[in-house]
Image (cartoon, rainbow, N blue to C red; front, side, top):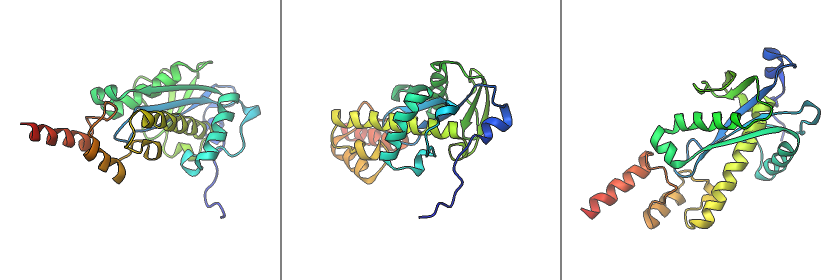
Length: 213
């Protein structure tokens, strides 16, 4: 099938900040699911060893993402951060996502001078200069790489949790609110890894409480 979209490149990195500035791309995975952590990745690419085929993770197959993940981890500087379910419930998903992004940057070595962040806003506690890029994972190679790392990392976390909590199909739905996930909640109940602040989970718990009264 002929591609109808332009692949990401380094235009955003070069045009705004120049090649002498250390720029990382940041993206997240897991804002929408009903279960599991939110995971963010920050990536500084080595321009001499950029893997072929980097793209928005949503455009790639699982096999291709896994292959590129290994290349990125081997050839780039990568920071990964997460916010737990308890932090999501305490802070709300937006603030927890900000926290995960800041944690990802904090473990980058070398520390970036500038961060290109996928989306329309910057985390308020970003420890460096930043620029928000709507659709950045489809236009910036650094953000595309971060989207792959965040997605593969979180998918693997959910696959591990699926082994510990079978029946919810997290190995295939990654905690999103699919029909299978909803049916499992009705059959098996809420686990410690479900986000109780999310309305579907909150409603299930409220209904359970009414039944017990």
